[in-house]
Figure (cartoon, chains in turn cyan, yellow):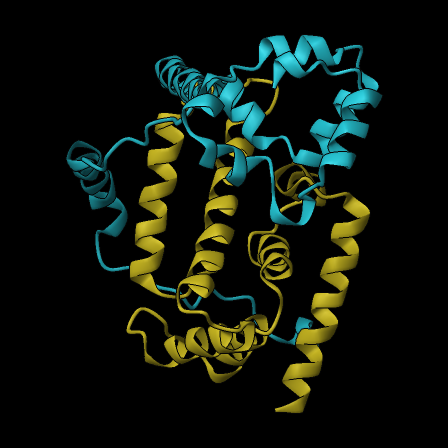
Amino acid sequence: MKLEDINKENIFKVPENYFKEFPGRLDKTMKEDKSPKSVPVFTIQNVLKMAAAAVFIIFAIVGIRQLGNQKSNSPLDILASVTTEELLAYLEDSDISTDDLLTTIDLSIMEEDDSWIEDNILLPEYELDDESIEHILNEYEIEMEYL
Amino acid sequence: MVIDHDDTDDLLQDVFIKVWKNIDKFREDSNLFTWMYKIATNECLNFLKRKKNRFFLPIGDAAGELSEKLNSSSYISGSDVQLKLQKALLKLPDKQRLVFNMKYFDDMKYEEISKITDTSIGGLKASYHIAVKKIEKYIKMD
């Protein structure tokens, strides 16, 4: 069977007076149309609010990072983060003389408490005999009055 | 296109509401009939797409559901061959069915259909020709 053999016919019907009543129903629907209007996300006010929030967040992040950095920038923190090896390497390569070091170090703490020297400087494995000490003192030209 | 009377009624109201709300966007370089028909076809195709998405229906199932309505709706009455033709139409992709309906049932010219669907006349002729072949094949099969 070909398409031409079929009578062209509209089989879809509408209720009686459908088109007569349709304008009235449409009018009623439009008046009752209380569907919430879609609010565009990118209004000027919304963009400004989002920009303000973004600026606040950026400042907050920068502020927190700076606070963190300030803490880590304190001399004590920096010194604490330097390893002994790094410190020794720095001192060897620097122009700081032994005299400078000895005049800078506060030796009073050592005078008050000998145990501090034992704990922090004279580790048992590095205990030296008198001859070795004398040799070091001569090599580094340290005068006895500093000790 | 949507078979069911209530769906058609809702869709027709939606189309007129859309026309009313967007009348200021109507450019007079096209005629009002073409502009309104374009809105109607877009609404119709979107409605069918939403319906399939809402119920996660594969194309075959959606066609099957509409085909059931052809048998059960009180607003549809036609001979067996007419119903068979409508069932054959439901086997077509929505856009192809739309083109077929506009050409076959509404007797529209390809030039008019082209303006409404933004499709080339050559493309429309090919689509209609393929649709006719599919329909005839379906009718012969059953």
